[in-house]
Image (cartoon, rainbow, N blue to C red; front, side, top):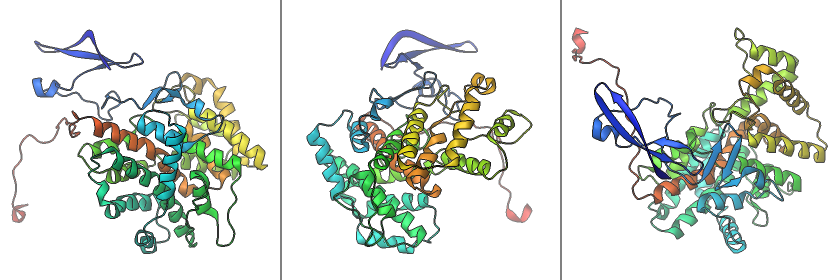
Length: 432
């Protein structure tokens, strides 16, 4: 970030205020209002922070108009080939550079060494109602990790941070798999140290005693890809939650648990679930894809078409393109014939050739194809958001670390525009 020679001028009555103008790596300008309240007693009004840069970051870059997403400057498309590797991307996001072979192997070994849950923590699953939402379990269990690993709460040095990050990323998949097994009344399957990250997760999800689930290469690659494409996405709701909690110097476990809770919201992490419900409803015979397109265009019709459009992207979501191609590969190699994929393709074709969608820049987003691909892998719908959280964890950790390393960072404390009563009196209960 650099400060330009330009100034932004705010005129309020006869008061004229000049503010610095900052410029980012890609040329985006930002007016620095950080001292506006302190020096002038004035705040800006931006209820959803859609026009506010809440931090400086070197982690993820998005250009929504051009459909660009980059991790540490690397275009997202480059992580698809030759072979997607979620752990490599996790290291990149957290530490800022691609790992050497030795660093990657050591990080993998760290994850393997920490894949087990403390037996007392594992026993906590037996106290959870079988039908509990998996996201509730994940958030609670991440918080409970702080009870078992208190030495990581201060995180005063780099070695402790790496160990804490490794524990979080590794144990999150075990917690996720156990929450699924609990909901099905199935015995817990311990992690297999001989398996890689995604294969190990699927093993814990779907193996049964004396019959191990065999993971095909294309399924393992697809799982890696889903996690990679969800690994970070700039200052979204859950990432901002992690930063807000972390700004109070809260530990990494608590901050990431807050991220899980934010992601749980249907407007954030649950969108692909809504897409699947929509596709299943269409498949049941209520409407055909063309009817859905027409209903979505009718302003008097409450029907909502999920999976199109994005708060940031005004072009085709680059993640959706990658997932579409991945879904085609998995379905072809697995010889899967899923009518929901055919319906999704028809919806996309209609929308991309309809002026209503084109003019409004309503393109398929990441949620449109992620649910279909997870379904092909065998992941049940109630686990979709948990998978999202597993993928996003490295991004949350990276954002927490970036903020933690900034010695000038203050606790995040937004202002408000008060519109309540000017003055009121307390009335004793007997007089009300």
